[in-house]
Image 1 (cartoon, rainbow, N blue to C red):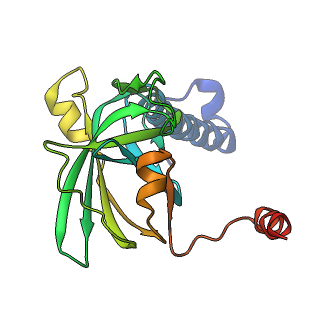
Image 2: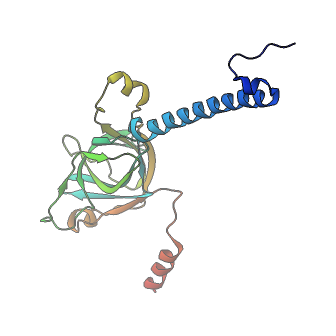
Image 3: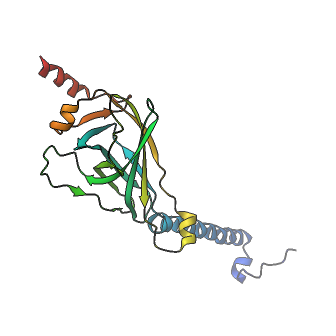
Length: 231
């Protein structure tokens, strides 16, 4: 004769099937509670604790211009923060290399917005960018050469390689947690082609020349309109 389970009441002990169901119910409740706790912990991490995770995306077309003797690259960028906490970009660096000559030059984030055609246009100076969690930021950043602007890197059409680096602020809080959970944004590399070069257009008209990704094609509607206007 089997002994009664002391954890069960006298009523349940007389019904073995009910006793087994009660035991299984207790185990199921424990498993459900554990899953609920784990889900809550993951949700809390994703929505509150997750360190900023910044990445940058560059448009397929950028602009090359001149501001006096200074070369200017106007680069449309989008910053994405996949973390829960706010990430701050203090500055950006654009390294440009000319494979034909082997020369490399570095440029810094100087202003927001497209390159102005008028010299008296007020410039919006670059300031640190704070991107809240799960948010994005998009704008055009104008990069100016570091140090002496001459000699210029670009003196003819061709293909050029770029490396864009974000310089971010440290996240407030315990350094160990930031080290374990945080990640520095990685530099991105891309290539753009300058199809032609006109000193008159760059220096006297202050207009820019588009530098495009080789794999990029303009929208069909825009290409059709351009052909119609040329007739």
